[in-house]
Length: 351
Ligand code: SAH
Image (tube, rainbow, N blue to C red):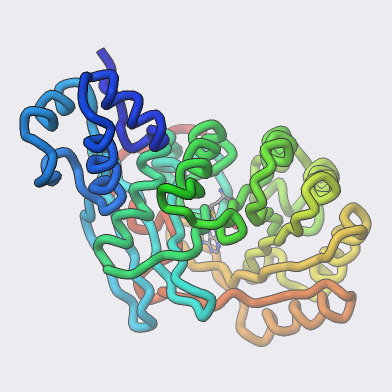
């Protein structure tokens, strides 16, 4: 019999479950309260042992456990979490003026194969359950003692490749009786699974969608991101425009600058023109990310001057651009780098 994952249940589902075992409703409230504080069934002092023992036979709470933790000189904290089956994933706690933000992983590894990314070096082990995404937020708050007001799904994995679990996670995290983090404070980043972008538009979550674009033409994008061979720039940007038309939510485009590959002024001009061609009816914003060097990949970032020039070139064409602050660069805060190090001895899949 498969054990029930209590932390993936909504509050109502948990109550129904506990009541179905012949228990009072307030026991469910107690269990819920402890789980939201990052406790497992072994750490619920006011719940009778007989009940937690019974629950442990038929259910479990797959709360991630802090395996390693690194604190950057800028205060950014990187967590390496161990999951119930020994898989490892990463989360990052960042401090911004608009509040504390936690960047979470959605999969253990990643199947997408982007050339510059450490998360995909060994392929994917498995998708994360809703509880394991929620658990990253809860444990980061428990460990740091800090409240988190923003969530970004920009850690390890492709959120839209784990669609159903990510949707359930969104419902759990936005639940008014639970974590109650507003959807406007949640961002989801995708490499561009176009069919799922259309599905997401139908869900009606007012989250922020980020698109990892990283190139202004198909040749460069396909070389950096294999997903582009399935859905090219035209299909992706058309989906973005349709998403905006349907939801009214603006989209943020992510562009990782890789020295010598996509960082010239001509690239910036082409980027502005392709965005206007397909998405000219929406406000255009590009977030520039200096590539974090991943030794295994041999990519280097351009210098600060070329990054600023790229940004100016976009602005001159009425595309707003920001350069992402490199928080935590001294602690390998780019997701996937620690996990890759930990599994360096495992064999990479052939592809
Ligand atoms: N799979 C999702 C979310 C995870 S990656 C996506 O592709 O959007 C989060 C962001 O970091 C993406 O924009 C990704 O392209 C970028 N990224 C990955 N490796 C990087 C690196 N070495 N340097 C800079 N950005 C990187």
